[in-house]
Length: 266
Image 1 (spheres, rainbow, N blue to C red):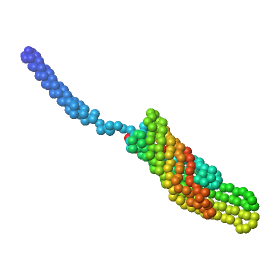
Image 2 (image 1 turned 30 degrees about the horizontal axis):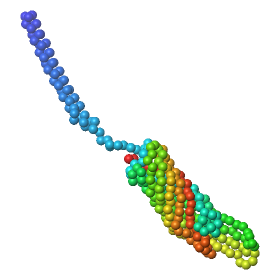
Image 3 (image 1 turned 135 degrees about the vertical axis):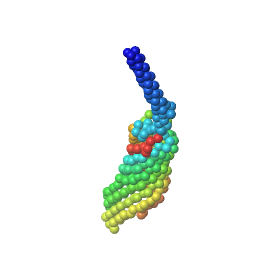
Image 4 (image 1 turned 120 degrees about the vertical axis):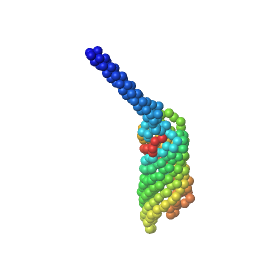
């Protein structure tokens, strides 16, 4: 009887071991299959194949110009009229009516490639008022001239190939100028009636503006400096009593500084 019980216990233990082993094998197989399903080739591909653009660039940190880049800037300048201070020297009399000017402009630039840039600019230039008074040969005189203009420029510029942040360029702009000129002249004689002239003119003129300058890239913004010479083709309107000897063209040299911001990334 003891032997029967002993054999019975052995059989039950063996059966339990077999059943337990099968369950472990099944569980291991299930886990393995689940791992294969979760981490197999398909899921590796789907998990690791991220939808990234081939190149990601933000405006901050850019160090090069590239095709399609757009720049928007605010530009300020100081302008120095050219010519003698007296109109008796013909076309060199712009300094007679216009003093040193300060102005502000809005500028939009577009790069057709890394070496060529188009620029559209509009602004307002207010030249300093010129005054003079004195007396000679029995009469006294006093005059005052004010001159301002709105320039609109469309230019093309070549960027020299350089490495790093410094980007020099040279170019030429075609320009239209909307000019306003006011003249006030008073003369008093020791005999006879005094002479007074008070006139104002508006004029539209065309010209060219060559320039030499550079951009300097500072992370998310750019410094911009340029020296330009404005040459306007047509003469200023004549006031009463002015002769052909007094023809005047508006010519001036400008030094411009601006801050420009790139619009969007590459």
